[in-house]
Amino acid sequence: MKTILITGCSSGFGLETAKHFLDRGWKVIATMRTPNEEVLPRSEHLRVLPLDVTKQQSIEALVEAAGPIDVLVNNAGIGFAGAVEAMSMDSIREIFETNTFGLIALTQAFLPQFRQRQSGVVANVTSTVTLKALPLLAVYTASKAAVNAFSASLALELEPFNVQVRVVLPGRSPTTRFGDNAKARMPRNFPAEYRDFAAPIFKAMREDTSAVTYAEDVAEGVWRAATDPTCPSMLPAGEDAVEWARAAGVA
Ligand SMILES: NC(=O)c1ccc[n+]([C@@H]2O[C@H](COP(=O)([O-])OP(=O)(O)OC[C@H]3O[C@@H](n4cnc5c(N)ncnc54)[C@H](OP(=O)(O)O)[C@@H]3O)[C@@H](O)[C@H]2O)c1
Image 1 (cartoon, rainbow, N blue to C red):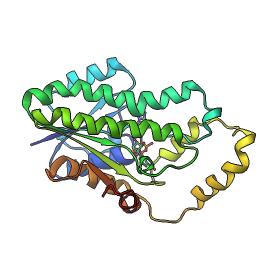
Image 2 (image 1 turned 45 degrees about the vertical axis):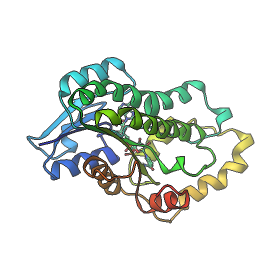
Image 3 (image 1 turned 90 degrees about the horizontal axis):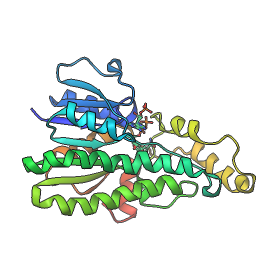
């Protein structure tokens, strides 16, 4: 029986992915900043462990507690929309600490066991915003595009050890807590100089009725990344994601 470890399982894509693998008979280590077993079905195959990807001590304790795993899913992430000029460097760093450096630190911590066993899969959840530039998302996009580039290079470096690295790219998913979590982080006062520019963009985002990505699409994408040896290194997940990837020549 294989073991998957997933970050950010308290809600959204991480939670759905944990359920998806439990349903298919895998052992699941669901990590959360604040562990809460209630959000997942009871199962002898489930372990819920604490992890804050921005804290090295938390990463080290997790690696010790987790033991051997077959698949690492770096899903935890935070969003932010706003004008770069009005963002504090503290919030810019917070986004990179979580989405980029935390992911790199956790991956690094699990690599020795993958290399020694000559097997393993790392699946990194980024975003289709990395495929087509959108305004007011510069820092978030940069934090995720860095993961795409990191993953592509790491995949080559780990080839000799039979370790696969894949990127799953969800599209827009208004049904998770992502948007609300991002809003809670954003300053209340949008800079006046950008208001006329930003208002129609935010309105269009709110009123957009085009195809979206569902948590199940991402769980299915991670499943393919974990189990299908022919899975592409960049896998769009969700109807809108597939369209964007095709337009960008990625899939
Ligand atoms: N929803 C979208 O539109 C969308 C689109 C493309 C890509 N994505 C990406 O998909 C991933 C999952 O997003 P989601 O939509 O499922 O959002 P979500 O419901 O907000 O889930 C994000 C998860 O990340 C966790 N997290 C945040 N900071 C963390 C930290 N420092 N350490 C460990 N865990 C942390 C959150 O835990 P807490 O409960 O502790 O905050 C939560 O479990 C993210 O990487 C996001 O960037 C989302």
